[in-house]
Length: 188
Image (cartoon, rainbow, N blue to C red):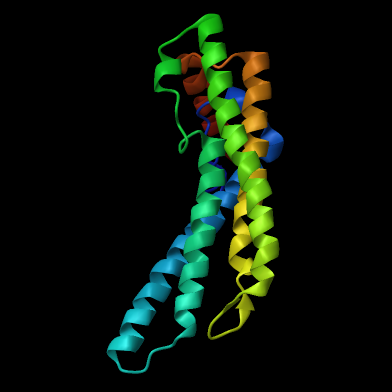
């Protein structure tokens, strides 16, 4: 398995569709690139300001990378069940009680994602009336990250709900370990 393949977690594999693994991988890489770009542009902004020759456009690039990094991270963390991880109580439950708790949690996350899509899209449309300086780029370019992230969060939440309903949310750790060892064994 190559490095990019290891970005997709085997943990909670029973809640994921393999068809979306490429998307998780792309989000992890995109989020890493946004974080690296953000760090580099912050350093470059500090250096140019200290040198007395500020590059004003760096602030726009920095804020764009920061915002996209955050919303890419939200989506990736939802697929990996790392961020919005509200299941501390649900993990202590078993059977139907766990199923009910997990579904309620995911309904809340899905509601938030749908709000991100709706209100994010409305802000995106309004953003064409405001512009960022010095480039005069519509501020909608920043707002676009909100509904896009909402769509991905909704997709990943529905994926977990469908697979959790079919396979259950509980998954024996031994099976996860066996899957991991199987994946390692497939290496060339």
